[in-house]
Image 1 (cartoon, helix red, strand yellow):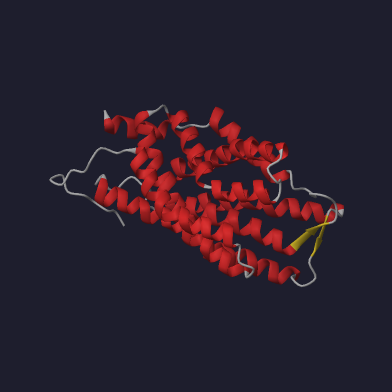
Image 2 (cartoon, rainbow, N blue to C red):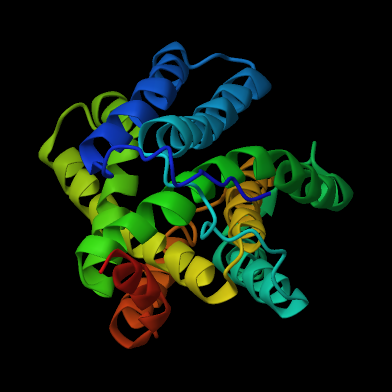
Length: 278
């Protein structure tokens, strides 16, 4: 669907501050409730998480439709190509599932007896489908709408970096919870927050690259949902037999991919947004 705004109803010029205020005002309260309440029933917390992610899309729609009135024609309203889905699902497997299999072979992981292989597969598929709701919410807001506006003002790579930092900051309620509950405000916790800033920004680079090159919110939403779902499924199905197991795999590989894409990736397709403004 393409939302079009007529030329005789101009909105105010895009303001990043106003956009973020709207999006954060709608999504953060739910996220904060989820982190503070931390309901014991898993699905309650997961549903709250998905709602907070989807509210990013709601806030974006309000901003683009009623405040700035600039529409969403360039958000990426296409299904993409089959090869795109194969690549991003393969990448999600590389980041989350393959290290678990390696860990099993090395004795670093054991499968929880209550889960089993069949249930593990069902979890990955089920979580992926359910997570599409939240995945689309974030991709529509951060990549489909905010990134093009940042590309109008900054160089392509700066726009990608800034959008990654904003994406990291949106997750602040979770980080504060971990900082207080796990690290008790220690210097180790501060190091965790800093490292999370770097890794989250680099992770956002890969999301942006998928969106820019596939021109599809559907592809990036699947990438987002499979990443969240595969990671959650591995967490539920496997246990470490040694401290952290291969817990370093995902952040290191994610970081390397982000650095390579930021440094060597072709971001010229973002030029059209800057030219449109000029």
